[in-house]
Image (cartoon, rainbow, N blue to C red; front, side):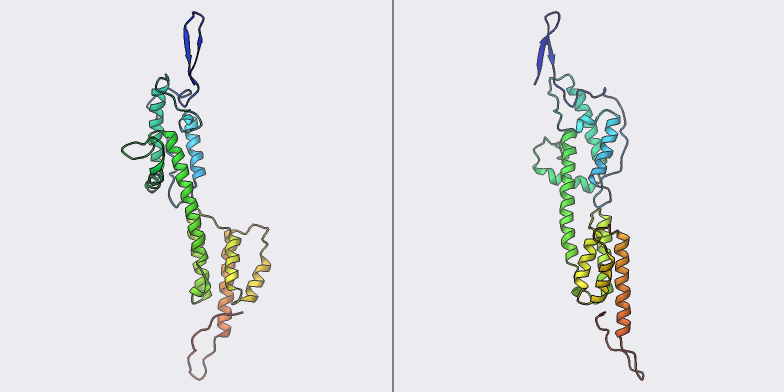
Length: 260
């Protein structure tokens, strides 16, 4: 809301409320330094990227142009042109801090956004709405990826593999892939899912390993790998012990499923 008051000479002075343009510096040829790009499937999450964005803009006193809680100035505001210039600069800079795949996801997510869009790239025209859209799109994408990951790991079932070693190796590859994509699954949960699948086949080994794990303490990724190695070692040992030895030149029959 624009207010006004009468000055000492009886002149009316217009008072404009605080906007994104109120505290901006004069427009200059300043170059905004780059930050680590927000990439799809990499171990940098949206929160660390946003912290880098804020710290960079704060140093240049430009942080207000990405804050949707602060209103944009109207065209009759004396700071309007300055705000428009800086918002455009920061908008371009934000796009340069995104991997092309992320830009594509943001564009698709924002197709039904109400914000005014640029006719060339179909993304919000000003920095504040673009910044908000990036946050929403990336967090929605992470949630979708977590859901798919949960479904994928639950499909790793023992009956689909010929050996315990192949089954465990599939689990290890799945967890490594999730870590590379910055999608976390608690190591204790992964171990318990494996134990459920192997309980009937290796009851003594699973019971022994369960006694070693404290659910209230932190189960690290290294501990998960160690458990995997122990299961494989026990399975191989059991398989060797249960494999018939050749007699009078006869060859072994087909290997049976390992049991404790």
